Image (cartoon, rainbow, N blue to C red; front, side, top):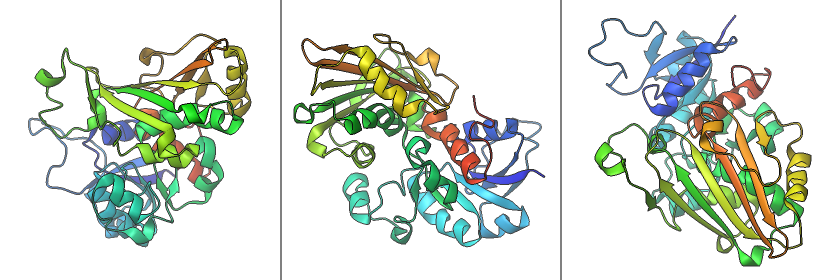
Length: 335
């Protein structure tokens, strides 16, 4: 029997991606949970989706037989709905940033607002499977990581743990993202005329994804400089990460560090020494691709990390976590 999974925010970019993955998944049946007046359908459609629909209420968990709910919603909606679905007995996976930072103080500092459900912050498991797999398996509430931190942490944490980065010299993460990362709600900044033939930086030194990297990779804020940049493509994140080596290591030796860490990880792909990924390699997949170029003579090193922001950076990672918590093969339904 199929496992019922509700999706709130099914008309947004991450929600649409989640619906597509769940529809193809052999074990899950998606149910569209309508939270706002907009159902997400084009009013010109003659025939709507054949998928079941229900109100985004606690009662729907019982009436629709839902084992889990994915919240592909803005943070304020997640703070409103997560407690209700948890109380109704559903496993909840939140794709927003509402529950990632563990304390009300951190949330206030980086999101510039008071948290509406602070009691749940300590319970939410940070759903980066490569590091929190066993916690995810036992969780009833999972905070899906942000797209930028997913690419950054998978690239940075193994090297921090190996002690090969000169942390006093700092780490610079130059991150470029497609427009879908800003969500589907129309704004002037993401309109066609603003984005096309343009390239812009935003959230400089104040981006709300920074604390996720600090918390997961064990860095101090003074050691990490992050700049997000918007490029005129629909999807994808490519992060170019610069740092100084604490010891002379070749590209091959650094790739070896990654290989020891990620040898059994199904969604991490490592490039040969001195080769780096591009966005075409990861588009529409749940992979994170990592490449290294090192210059031992000067102590310089560059790591390039690439993901699809809507898949490994959002919906795909949510289904990866859902597979784990439901006791299924972690790669099921993903590519």
